[in-house]
Length: 455
Image 1 (cartoon, rainbow, N blue to C red):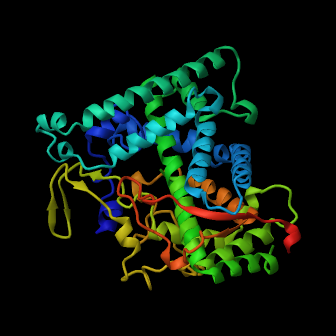
Image 2: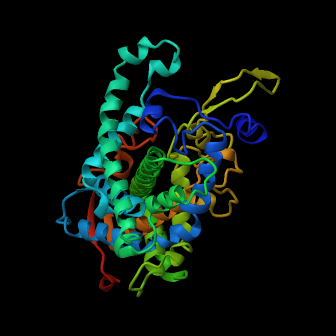
Image 3: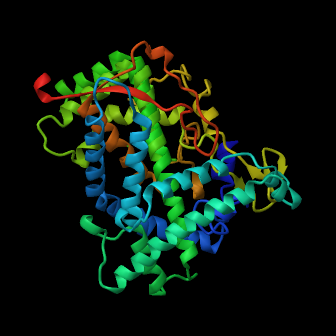
């Protein structure tokens, strides 16, 4: 059925339904993720693929990633006194800062902490249940639920912040100050403003359109990657042999709420599976042994770490239910008539745990991907962490490197233990319900700095 909706009849199901919360948050759905299918969506999707998230642009942010990953390591090192530290908080701070710098330069953001806090609250509200979305024609429900007024209040605060960022960019451009501060190159707002002023776009864009896309980039970039890393770490702590094997393979072999959520889940899964943690750690330490910097080309060669991340995506997809699609025309599937405007939800969480497709489906087994051709590109319909078809996530490259780099740094620089009295099998893996399935409780671990002299 998923293949029918997302491939065979992809064009018929290419649009998005209009939802109360997201219509407000995304400036009448003029972003990329929630925009209805049509000329505007096609134009902005093309801008995203060819201008914002090209491989070249993603690589241009490498100095920002390295700088922020080093800050993450320093922050944890300054907190290590043999007591558990809040890994969730530190990873989400890394992802937020990284995304801020790539999207609109942190020095132009008046109040980063306030912006992050408001956006997370907006995402939480957007992920909740709204009766008004089920019965959109009954206008009184928009008032009775109270959701609209709460979102409008928060959105007003976000609007003031992003408007200030855009105005500062315009001022800098007018004075000849282009580029992403100390890191050089254009940030994402620079690119959008250039396109807006150039007159090259068939459908002109406004400040509000730029704001909507900024919110898209930030919300997606900060939640998913971090959560996966934390899950992976938890599984490795449950299976110490995997942690040891990863370290050993690196020593003898050859020596990344989107991003943040991913990293956190990956860490969590590795802590539940200490053998996974050991193997991944060994791989990373061997790969970077004697190197002064973490070269991203080397990270691309960390095969086992990539298997850990893939398995984390299987058990903890960034969005357990893919963003809803809406049928643009009456369609027939398997003998059933699907009416116009029917909403379709794809449960990738259930698909990733379906024993029909996965052996020992509820267990974290990274090596299942060792000889597997399954990838993220939407061709394997039992595994769709980034979706498929026309509405597939365009930011895969940006998201993955934002998982791999911080996760590799955490594995290289620290030995990880669970708090005293907590066994791997007792790690709390309860999930929150919402647009992203983050951990319900924050992940606390004991980090011991690792030094080469220990070998």
